[in-house]
Amino acid sequence: MDMNEEKIISCVGCQYYYITWERKHPKGCKYFGFKSLQMPCAVVKNTSGAYCNMYTPKSNK
Image (cartoon, rainbow, N blue to C red; front, top):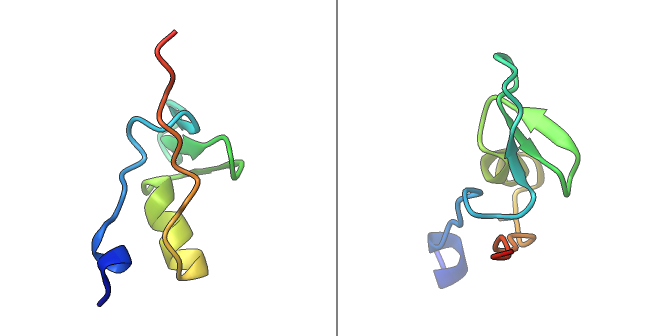
């Protein structure tokens, strides 16, 4: 396992992450446009085999 694989970034704090408040799909990603029961970063990893590299910190407005 290389250094990139050891670092998993959580979606919390990303500007694209949001809570949907739907029981079956409570977590969402605005960048990729989906809702899921799992964290979006886990869905991206499981689907594509690669870690999500779209993490963008929320701006402090």
